[in-house]
Amino acid sequence: MRLTVTRCSREWARTGWAPTTLQISRERHQVHQIGWTRGSFFIYEQPMLVAGADVLLASITHAASRMRISFATELDVAAECAEIADQFPQWARFNAIVPSPQPRLRAWGELMRDVYARWRTAGFAQVDAIADRHFVWAQRT
Image 1 (tube, one colour):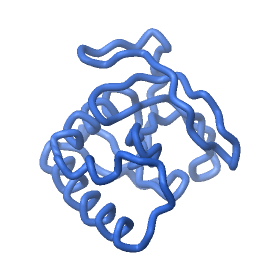
Image 2 (cartoon, rainbow, N blue to C red):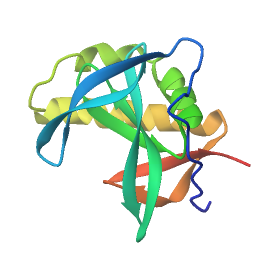
Image 3 (tube, rainbow, N blue to C red):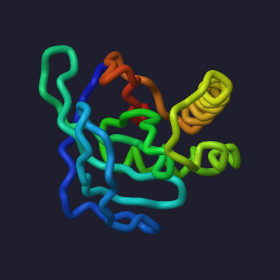
């Protein structure tokens, strides 16, 4: 699947998602990122360089740990993916910002395999691009 990106409006709204600001790390700096939260997740738009092109992607971030789980091609896709991911009870293991020892990383990897499988079942697909070591997800057309 090829990467196509739709610019999302800053006026984006979706039932259950609240506008908020979250402090995250970006390029070794702490920044206050404006985005939206629901349940365990925070989503926001971020310009990225992917395959030599500047694109606007939607980041899907676990809010408590500040760990990004993936990118999506637009905010609606990110919101749907986050809503699906939030159904997994295992997120409680990651509700603190701490250095990740090996067992925690293994648990994270196992959870992400399950989340990605659920996204595929829901009709989402990885596109042919990777941004910041993460796959980019889109809705199948």
